[in-house]
Amino acid sequence: MSAQAPGELQQRLSFLEQLNPNRIELGLDRVRAVLERLALDFGQAVIIEAAGTNGKGSTCALIDAALRAAGYTSCLYTSPHLHRFNERVVINGREAGDEALCEAFDAVKAAAGEIFLTYFEYATLAAFYLFAKAKPDALVLEIGLGGRLDAVNVLDADIAVITSIGLDHVHILGHTEAEIAGEKAGIIKPHAQVVCGLMSGSAQAVIAVKAQEQGAELWLEGRDFAGAPASDAQGFVMQFTNADLQSEFNGSLPHPLVPEICVPAAVMTLQLLRRRGMNIPRTALEQALRTAVLPGRMQLIARQPDIYLDVAHNEPAARHLAQVLQARKLPAGARRLGVIGMLRDKDVESVLALLSPLFSHFYLCSLPGERGERAERLKQALLAAGTAAEAVTSFDTAAEALQAARAEAADIDEIVVCGSFVTVGLADEALKNC
Image (cartoon, rainbow, N blue to C red; front, top):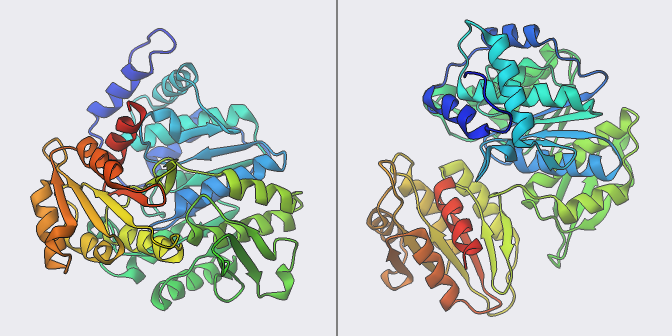
């Protein structure tokens, strides 16, 4: 990555992509060595890390938004991005600019020297470089893959959030929920605070053991705190069942833009920050619930009909999406339409078996590239899951599928675009070009 004029971000990213974006070299020794060379100073910033099979990005987005609404400087790191790399690195609500990212990449490259770094490791260290310059009150960091050996975990979390556990990346993380939970629990550091979302008893037990080993304070959803959509589906009700946690966050709250099942862990984390002395009033949480979004994660992108973009692409994500959709009631007479395209290396059949009962009609699309799956395979998977043939229509492109869904939708209907980052990205571009 040779010296170039400031602002030439794409050239830096092209260099990183040549490293092979699919190459994963788990382990923290190399990242830690480069971090030490960078000599970054985060001051007294509280560090919040969120791991989990699904929901971690939206959880981070909500925490970050509430901190900023309360007047704190917060830095947010999420991955992957939908359109622009800049989406990953957000400093006090603003995406990092091209020139700043170029400076950060060049600093990381110089510090790395002979040490090999992967794409994600470069990205993570570049984000840390810019975050240190911002002198924040808080870092809110989404773990990319797993936890124990993820590059983000090179920083010790003051609060470790584990949102959910499901079977994904099994060739790397393990073939059971307990094994995967063990990897996620690797973000729990000595004397930290731990927020654990709803998950199986076997996964929760692994996290509880790790927390005990580290002398960490563990808070469990369902035992210490809980939350659910209000009965009228117009709000969200939060409840702290542990007497030590009673606060003004209890009770009825605005309906969130992020998926509802992400809210309890995020609110619990904010309550722990309050216990650390941060002044986060109820009004800041309410503002965050009304405004916080993460691109492509149940993102409301259009109205009449409502169009949501969600990057659910594996079985745990599809289960997560199904829970979100089942929890939200449609107006009387409204239909839910699905625009779906997937990659061929995903478990197409399992994903569509979960989504099959949730939509009145499916608009399937083929995706481009070697990994793109044809719409015909998706159709066969839906038919095998019990979807009626007349409820399935196939298209060559995501843009065509979305156009057909919009043409046939009433204003009160809902369209959900999902199945892949590729599908969501193409649909988003099509909407912008309408």
